[in-house]
Structures are given as C-alpha cells and as structure tokens.
Amino acid sequence: MSDAVPDEPPLALLRLLAAEDGLSAAKARKRLALSDSELRRVLSALGNDPACAGLDLVTTSADDGRQRLWLTPRGRSLVGSAREAGVQLLPGVRIDADGPMPTLDQIADETPVALLYNGVPFAVMLASPCDLEDFALGFALGEGIVDRAADYRLVDCQQGEDGIALHGHIPQACFDRLETRRRSLSGRSGCGLCGMESLRAVLAPLPPIESTLTVSAAQIRTGFAEMIEQQRLNRLSGGVHAAGFVHRDGVIVREDIGRHNAVDKLIGALARQPRGEGFLTVTSRASYEIVHKAARAGIALVAAISAPTTLAIRLAHATGITLVAFARGETMTIYTGEARIAPAD
Image (tube, rainbow, N blue to C red):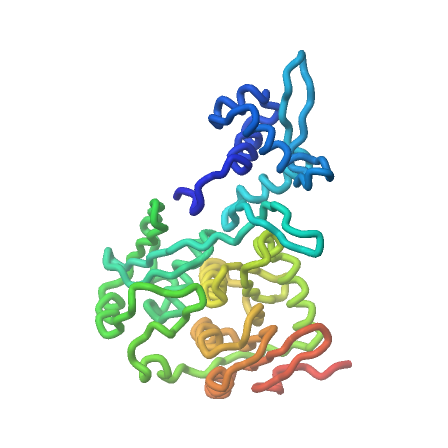
C-alpha cells in the first residue's frame, strides 16, 4: 500500500540514504530532482548543526573531493524503526518555549481493514496493519461469527491502495447466521459491538466462565509492567493500545490503534497457540465490549488501566468474570469476583 502522505524532500532523502548510505550529494540531488540550493536547505533541516535547529539525522563527509551523505546513528535508528509494520515516519512542526522547530515523528499507522466471509464483505475496521492473521481469527471469534477456531480459515490477504482485505472462509451454517446480523460496512478504530443493529443481539446472555484461576494483586501489577515493556509500537509512536494475556510462562501482547482490535488480535493469537489459564490486561477503560470478548474467549479475569462502565460490571457479574479497573501503580479497584484475587501475604 502506498504511503498515506507523499514524500517531502527530507523524507525522500532519508529513505534514499537508508537504502544507500554514503551516497554522493550529486547523485542524491539528481535522484530527488533537487537544485543545489534546495538540497542545501534539506541538509540544513536534517543536519547536526544546533545553530540551524537541525534534527541530527544526516551528516556529510568529503571523499575524493566529493560530498557524501550519511545517516547519523539517530537517523539510522529513526528510519530503521519506521520500516516496521504499524509505523510511518512523517514530518511536523513542534512548538515549545523556544518557538517552532521542524521534526520527524514515528506515527502509528491507521489502515482500513476489510473483513470478508465466503467472498461477502462484512465489516471494515480501522486498524494497525500488523498481526493481521491474529486479528482476522480473533475478530471472527470475538464477534461470534464462528464458535471455534477450527471453523475459520484465512484464505487470502489482499493489500491495495485503499487498504487491506482479509478473506476468510467459514462453514455454511456460520455464514447463514450472518444474514440475521447485518452490520454497517465501516467501523471506527475504537468500535466493538457498537455496529450491531439489534440491542437484543448486543445484550444476549453468555454462558458463565468456568475457571479455578486465582491471582494476587502483585501478579496483576507485574502483568501490566511486563505488557507495557513489550509495547514496541507504542514506544515508537505513543499512539496505540495494548492487550496482554498474563499466563504461567509470561505475557503475550498484541497492539493496535483500537483497544477492541488489540483484544481481537490477542484472542486470535491465543486460539492459534493456547497458553492455558491466565488473565487479560488492557491499556484502556473496561468497556462492555472488552468484557464481552473476554467472556467469549473464556478469560476469567479482566484488568483495565482505566475506568469500568456499568454494562461491563453487569456482564462481568453475569458471566462470573473478575473485573479489575483503575490498575495503576500500587492501586486497583475490584468490582466483581473478589474471591478470585488472592489475599496479600
């Protein structure tokens, strides 16, 4: 898929040097179709001269009378990170007490992802374009489109100018069920069950969770800390949510611009490779949709960094899920299922 924003000369030069570091200034000027004065202005913006408010991304050297351009360690790190799925390197202007200053930031990528079943479009979600196989399976399970992971098969992932299409195959019985659940073919990055048309369908009862899981408050704090440590995309961009599954052997984490998408990706990952008993941690509020997805996945405890909603608490009560919210630092609040939290030593 093409970049969302056309390359400006500074970005184009950084990408050129990422592929061919040490390129001569003459060749760079020719490939970028820049005049000598235009290239000098670009180098001034990207250079390491504090007097010019440069970004310390590119430096120059003389070799056989020719000026060569090199990425600085900071430039190499920035451009290398931006190649990773889920992040784009884009320009901006930062304003602080010293006035405006040009900058390049790693921005969380937001991509339309269409979900199709047996060739028929069902929904378009705005999501981070990574861990898409997990997302496709987790969405199908979390939305009740299929009841078992074995009922879903990702047959194609098509990437085009406008977004990504995930083509899934499901049994005919599951496909027939979709006819009673029409959904708008567009979704926000924060959208979970909100696209359903029937309130009765949204609030349909779910079976209670059967689990002997018991955890301590200290384990919940440690789980959050380990999840945050694994938030690679958020470290780069500062703009994505995470969902973590804390189990006996560690924490598995999935990230996305949408909190529900992150949970879907995590559920998909767990369906593909089960980890046994564990609990869910999310970097968001504890919404009804989050608890609903956890209940469908058989997860007995949900811990959120922010506030719960009334519907989330009601659903947690009804399904036997332990709901913990405001899990920040040493504090947290237990709203349901207190017996599942082991007392402190």
